[in-house]
Image (tube, rainbow, N blue to C red; front, side, top):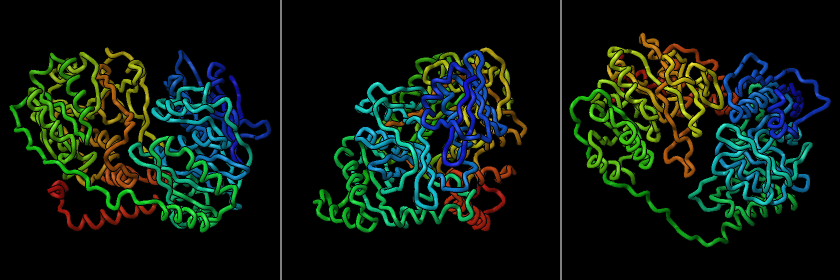
Length: 605
């Protein structure tokens, strides 16, 4: 076994791993290595038959990991171990680079474009400090954890074209890539913060820079606080002090070309000139005032006529239903793949599409498919959005059984015929039926979600060896992703009618089936491929508020304790933000309960 000691701020952890993956771990953590620290915890990577396990040293073990997925779980375990006991600083979810001894803090939620901006600034000569965590001490100094740069698909292809990343070391981390450029500068030691940037990547947007007040910057930083529970004041004093003393901007960009000659110049001017927050705001405001207005009014969003629903047809054995929101391409290819690769089930199958944006640009094209696809039904619906729309599939279905899929899912050939046979053998089943997720390499699978909190979600992908063989018998699972699931229509227990937006269904619906006397099963033959990447972005709202709200409502409905859930979101979002959401949901539920009868379904009408 190879041994590393990794250090960050005043914390350290030991990492032990087989020699065969030591080079990967060194690529990720090379600049976190310490010779003098005395770790309090050991994270151990085990390996056998090309599969690995990660023991985080705190009682949680993840098994059955392929090498390409290993780094993701190790990084999460290491970061959690290094920040969970920090009491001498505020651990911020942020990246950072340095110029002439001063740091630029690049802060914001996952997916905002932090790593892309960090990579671009590195290419412009800034020293790399971190892309994930920076610890802010009471004196306003930043101590950063310089792991390898983790970038998402789509961004990785653009970043490796930057000169500083030519010939960069790269390893796989789930669907992400970890890059380690050979020529870029890696900084060490603490740094004063001279500028805070809150980036937003939007491929359809043009470059904009907006100066922020100290209060606005502080509220955004509170949302990035990872260890608020460790600190007497939740870290608020250190965050507000930083925000008062440091210029902060919100920066929107759609490409690296937008940043060129703008973001790097701005950073150098602010850092080299020592502009204070108020001076920086005046400077940027004066530039905005001199810029000619290209357009005085934003065009109104175009609205399209809502098509009529397709009349309900005769009963069928199976309804394959999907809800879609401006995803015509996904729905089209999923439907046509079902017809091309599963002809043996078509005669007794109905295709049902719930259009969740029926006055949007895809509605007419989705409606027109009824003229080309037999047994196809188009149903427009804009009263609910998100998770609850799947409930409408069961309300509208003409099938005795319902297979609910996302509008961008492929099912392996032969699987639906086997599902038909299974349903014929179990006509009165009360079980929730799912199958293994098949990854993009069409070889790796995940059979279930492991029931634990990770990155704002209940459950993470896991593998039960019984699911490797498509011919293996069905087996019980705790939960699984909701991209594909099936049941007898009469056995569907329904989502809580108070759900709003996206999130909260995994685990909740599984427990609801179990409480109703059913099982939650993995059918190893029912393998499905899911398109996760949305390089052009998602067209609908997906918020922390809706997700936390659904978890709280669903858990309380089923009698599941919410303490662990609440603790997770307080650690993830910070005490202030999480408590505000939780208290708001509870007030809303208390108010709505006074206006609701005993039958919650009446609340939907």
